[in-house]
Image (cartoon, rainbow, N blue to C red; front, side, top):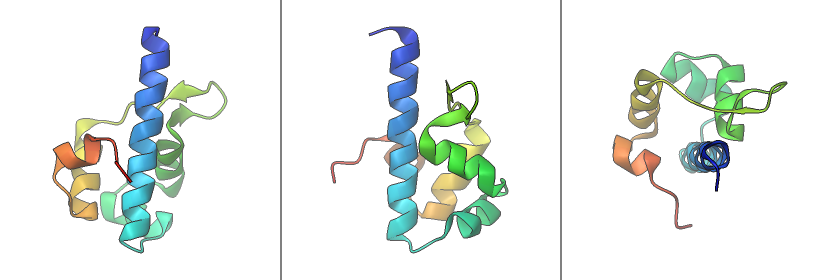
Length: 86
């Protein structure tokens, strides 16, 4: 698997994990984005595994964004980054 394919796979898995945890917490995208301090569009992109819809480039969130997401979702950062077994 190429580096680009691995990045895309990991970005999609992270996006799926974020969306899953958000739904478990009964949070809308708007509410979670506000808690994290990012735009709703940015969260939508992260959940889809993208950083740019036009270029289809994989998401590459900042560490500070990941920490804020883990805090808002109530999970430790390592748990946010692991693939969900559900």
